[in-house]
Amino acid sequence: MTGPDRTWAVIAGGGTGGHVVPGLAIASEMVARGAAPRQVHFIGSRRGLERRLVPAAGFPLTALPGRGIQRRVTPANLTAALGLIVAVVRALVIVGRLRPAVLVGLGGYASVPGVLAAVVWRVPIVVAEQNAVPSAANRLAGRFARAAAVPFPDTDLPNATWTGNPVRSEIAGLERTGPAREAACA
Image (cartoon, rainbow, N blue to C red; front, side, top):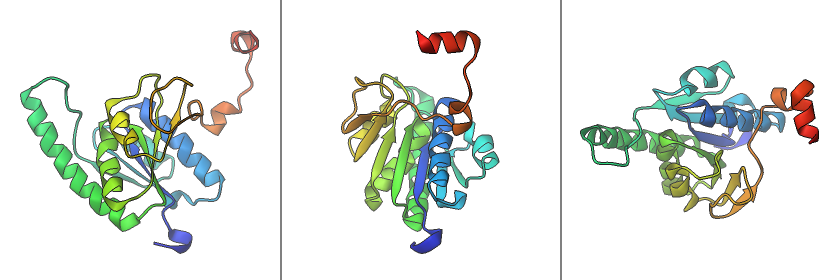
């Protein structure tokens, strides 16, 4: 897709506020830099916080089935693996239809289908890691990513650039008062 309706980015991930909120900060910055909200598409989980937060922020969301795979062998992992297969197939269709300029992987199980679809469609991947120790999903995505935005200088991901965590503009612009101001000056 080209022209004014071209999808700038697919932002993949979610499940918790720790993934969704930084993704919304990234999406809001894209809008501030000229993208229309419809040009930033989220792929997330049917079970996650993104089901409520992303549409409320004005961005399109495709919610996929699935849940995290546990690190030990359990019967629930069979169901989770089947859900992952379905989610990857749906993500392949979505990413293939949208042909975004970039896919931003936020981490968490909800990011994996989008990242794998981006690999297949050769869409450039950028990892946005929010933690000092990268998640399993972001370690996988990091193998294919052109860049990784990390919160700390020693966060171990390939092609990492220390950016800190994305913060919504309405939070970043708040004036610090009282103890918060004192802590910032220390």
